[in-house]
Image (cartoon, rainbow, N blue to C red; front, side, top):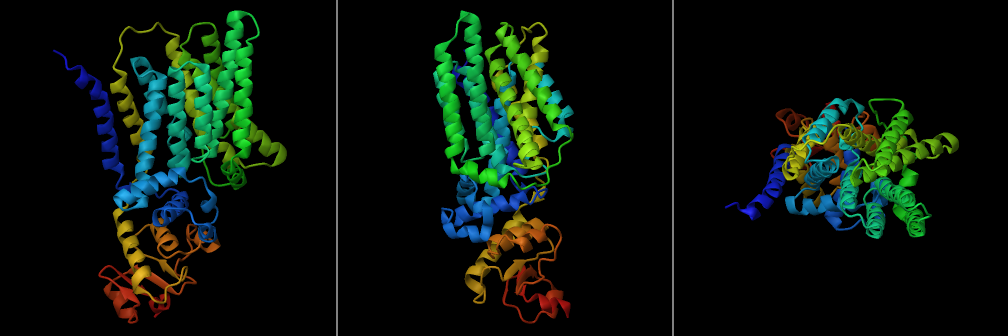
Length: 473
């Protein structure tokens, strides 16, 4: 006799095992490819220590105090459990990447071997684009965007399996409103996908009934008006619009962004056409609508930049992670749909977690800097600032441990020692000597340091806090 309960639980257990393996493999590390991690950790540390973002924190952590904080709250909660918000960020990042590709696998068609194989090959072949989902945290560290992506693809999967248009409209609007507090860019993509999908429903019903579908048009107008209201009234969107003018460093593997966006939109239009002619599944309508909406937003952002100087090239590029991934998903389904459907199926509950683990492994390979030494130094720094240094005032002390990456020293200086995130702090990531202009420095304790610096203001077997001038003797 077959144990049906055990059979149903096997995919869940497999998914948990794969996720646990990813946490074991990468949870002990951070990525040092982008100083964006430092800024996001500032907000997580603020929440971890105070269970809120204090109004006065804007003077120390700058714009991060105003940043939509839902993803940072998630990392702080994990931090309360594990003892480190920095570990919390890594675990939430791993979970987000894994969930994104788990949902993507189901959307592409995890039960069809050809779809799984073709998507895996496309994923590997197009890594050079540096703009598939997950690459938000590879060279840069767009942590909240990846977290919001998981919500976005979860909603697309739900919508593809629940075809009641009113339920879809409510779900998409709620997801868009909630995602505003995670990452407004992805929230706008969610709302735009809903608008395009409702438009497609209207066209499809018009084709079927050969008459104007009043009910669908009313629903479309409600979704459009509600989406605009969510965008214009949410304060998180206003904050992100101001931040969008900052032109950061984001390098993709291609230059013609609008050509790529148009190509992806054309693939999506092909998916919708196939659905209208009865040769595609409903999931193709969802994916086609989503990629057309995503491409439209990228093109709109580009037009606003060129015509009005609104935003930046950086902001335009951030749309491309969703655009390119959806383009690949639509292309995979379009290609496999041109061939007779194979009668051979594979358990989607097995193939989807495997594909998600496979993709996540490549995304997370850049997490290769051990976090334990940073946490050890940070623990001592927090203790010293709180209990050992009567002379300590926020900003008069920095960490400069030669055994740590510069990013680790920056994190300690900006959190434990409460140095403001100002022009001087920004200069550290450009190579400036962290000890210049500071009253005290926490350095790695060595016999040479002990000999040079007889006056030590706090010390342990690993670290010592001294005046930097003694190092020049």
